[in-house]
Image (cartoon, rainbow, N blue to C red; front, side):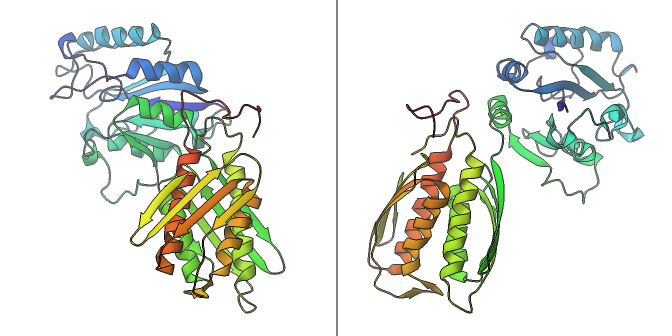
Length: 377
């Protein structure tokens, strides 16, 4: 199945003038770095490129075709010279008030892609600078990459109560960020782990934004797991039904094992990751966490707690949580903490843990190699 990039022209590949109509060469200016990074997308990534553009009143006295085609052909030739070839070009010539079925965000020009098993629309993207491009993505069943130099553009052409936040995969003004986003696909994984003692379901997106939905039945544990999502800037959903009528042990330990396993699964081949720590102060406390997703499990733990419980969570289970995580994730973990306030101490550890993970899983799109002299992790 082919993945498609449906790419807008004006405001996306070329900059728009104040009157939003490129009808002379003195108005033509290419978007910064578009040749570099759209060229890399065309050469390196497995997407078919399709141009989709609205040209208000093209062919009327307000927008004569002879002015348009000279510029359009120049643009297409310039991109072809840089290795960027469009498999198809769709141009709607109507005015907004006509609400034509062929005008973005409507899909009348793109019916060949709908319900066609040759195309993978769920993993395709619309790239554009107007909210109508995002709405087009929704109508196609794709995702939107929104170039946000002016988020209000096109707002008068969609219904005000349209919910489009879930359609936007990336907001940016940079073609470099678009290239990196497309090259470094989201690393997502899920896991279900059911035993006689616990039923656990976890969903993880390492490249998320910090959203979380945590429910373990232990409120303080939920609070700590939320730190991992928020400070690690990953999306994390955890749903646990455990035998809390016995005690907290199975719920905490089994959640940690499953969490480690889902991290290992999401990291996949580990190409391009940084691998390696973080030190974080929190009021009276100092926490140091270093992690290595190197394929071997080990825990060094230097943190003592004077209280038996913090919230509903036994302090003896903190060690067990991180030990179980290293077993599931096949990671080395070194944790040290000092301070006087016990709540601050463990919260600082979880925050530093989240930051250490964020550093370790970060990727460099220009160095997609395995960070190991052994040749495997």
